[in-house]
Length: 109
Length: 109
DNA sequence: AATCTTTATCGTAATTTTACGATATACGAT
DNA sequence: ATCGTATATCGTAAAATTACGATAAAGATT
Image (cartoon, rainbow over all chains, first blue to last red; front, side, top):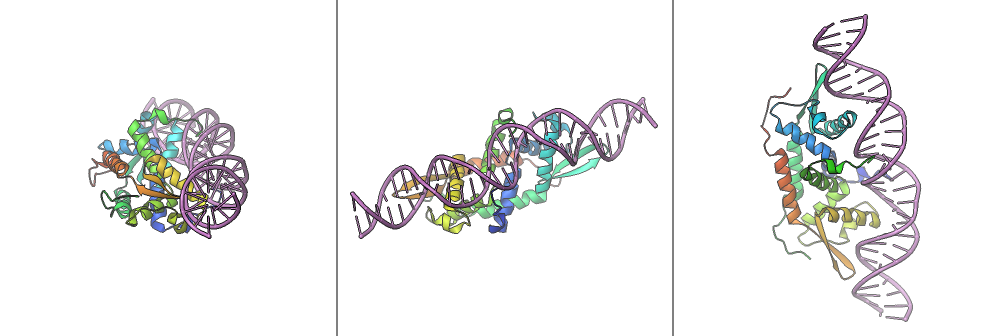
């Protein structure tokens, strides 16, 4: 940004926007989907699934991990990623707090 | 991006990432929250609520509108914004498709 | 008609994101 | 010990985002 205004907003808004930002790229959506689909967790199978270079995928994985959406664990020379249910629940709660009390079919404008 | 790879991903992933990106900023979260809270819809009250210049808020409103999350209607010299329930429902469905079949407490790694 | 209010758009600078190739690192296998 | 495989990190260029002030546009008010 031109200036960083992040601290002028509510904490919950900042956190929710972080989670959304982590998911704000098709590659990262598909990473999450891939991990969610396979019964066991994944490593570099993700690289095979995505139309991106290995280093780019690694970068996307890091972003998801930084936001807390996935966890990564070293398994020999490989790396194993899983969804973090705690953070997924956190996102669900924050989302409910945002949209929770929408009056359905409210007259508007 | 260095190169635009957006079309190499699944349509649903691209769409969901668009919705997330639209919400990937604290200001836009708070805009949505403000509109959701007030029983009637809002115009430039939003500018008063946010710690940002009017032109910047206008820019954020445009992004939310482009993604379809809010609708804007001109009302005299003022402008009135509302949440778009259809798109909110769309997001909910796409989200369910992503996380829908997560096995709770799956053994991992 | 002149002016005020409200909002959108334009031009811009600073920062961040996206993507890649080229390494580095770490482990397993030979 | 050497080599191969898997993954992370570094350096980078191109593009997008964020923010602002200055203006334009459109309607209301005097």
